[in-house]
Amino acid sequence: MRAVVMYASGDVRVDRTPRPTIVEPTDAIVRLAATCICGSDLWPYRGTDHVDHQPMGHEYVGVVDEVGSAVENVQVGDFVVGSFFASDNTCEICRAGYQTHCVHRQPGAQPGAQAEYARIPLADGTLVATPGTPDPDLVPSLLAASDVLGTGWFAAVAAEVGPGKTVAVVGDGAVGLLGVLAAKQLGAERIIAMSRHADRQALARDFGATDVVEERGDAGVARIKELTGGLGAHSTIEAVGTQESMMQAIRATRAGGHVGYVGVAHDVALPGEEMFFSGVHLHGGPAPVRRFLPELIKLIWDREIDPGKVFDLTLPVEQAAEGYRAMDERRATKVLLTF
Ligand SMILES: [Zn+2]
Image (cartoon, rainbow, N blue to C red; front, side):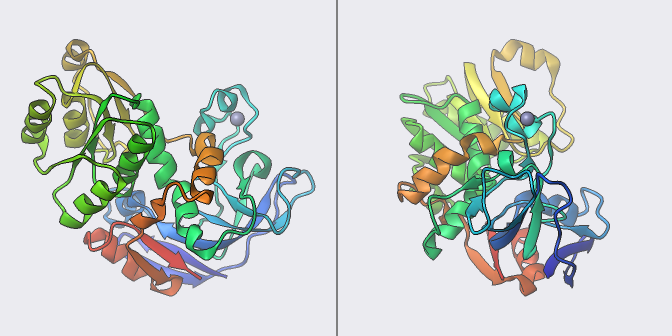
């Protein structure tokens, strides 16, 4: 099969590798309908994270091709959506809605999801079947549910977004944009997207943003305060993962408000004294996408939401290297790869 492998930073290739096979009786093999490149794939691409011949990808939708002898909830031929961690969905942590912290968690698509086939461990807990074979135009949205939509949704839930609230969104990548969509669905009254890119601002407005703030850092915080009577947002979504973005999110939030942070933290250090006096709630981390999949699949199936619009470049998998370049150079927000 064809599979995307990152040999080293900046060096992405498409290799011929063996199709994965069932290892544990709880595994399923999925033939992917499409896959995509994640903003977090840029950390190793840019050399921030070490990488050495790594099979890439963790977002997937597709058709179950084979199941292990213990799999009961999905069958060969089912169209399924999974997410980046496999989880049993039965342990106490899973039942509390924190499947990314499952006591049996492991990578969701092995060896990687930017490939024609992937092995999905703990298939019964991890995979959610759609009501039938989706129309082709629904595939990008279902793929978005696998990570970026589920992650943006969790950020909004963690930030306690709800009716009557003002929400600020730090980060205009796919997760931030879908955080806007989630905030809209969850009933936010006002949604302030922080972005300085015209195309992303337009998509943010399309997803439900009522205001756009172009300033960053302290100037961005000052602008949010200005727009909220000096108080700050009730709920802030942090979807970047840097020191600057995290502090921007915390400082843009009013006392008693909530920050939902889902940008993978890189060298973020929180100042204890400032946190103590801020009165702001922080919650986040790797999103338990599995918690939200049934609800998100239904919204997509019923065509209530169209998160697939975040894909602004579609390439055949052979051109994966160009997809990485386009995202690295911010020529594309999110790249969908086809087989
Ligand atoms: Zn579990």
